[in-house]
Length: 197
Image (cartoon, rainbow, N blue to C red; front, top):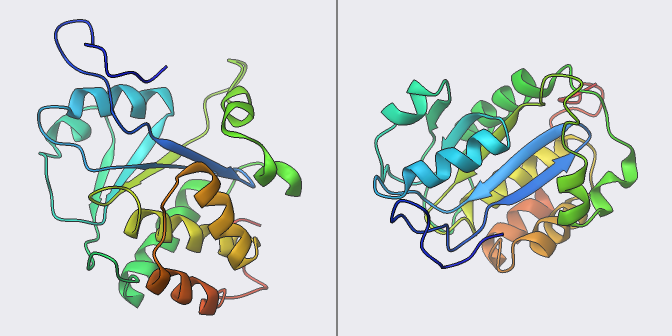
């Protein structure tokens, strides 16, 4: 599916495939940072997964205009490479997750044990509008972006270490030791007010 062979029209395909994460109706796509040159390939992937928002955790490497023209909102929530996100970015992230997935149907608890291929098959069958998906990226898609997704999974009820393992099974090398310690100590905002109820 993802190869290094030339793409029709002379463009190359993505070297690092996106990582799809779905849990309890929330859908995320972790990617590395696009450039202006390869942004059309990312837009194809974003359309495939029905991405409604792109969260940039690193400084901009591409113009947001082509995404906005496709109806995709771009959020610039930059924080340090290899670091945990500051509270204001966590708040903004959780607000976005809540807005996009508040009314999503809950998936069975065992959903987070499916393989990537199984998850791909669980996508929309065409009988209803496709579920929204939030894409997030940092430079390589290994630190800051996976940390945000792990926070969302924890807020949805997944234990912290399970969230890390789940992401790492799908995106090798994700989440460094400093970020792991942050995630281990992360406390859900409120057990009574989950992001998705």
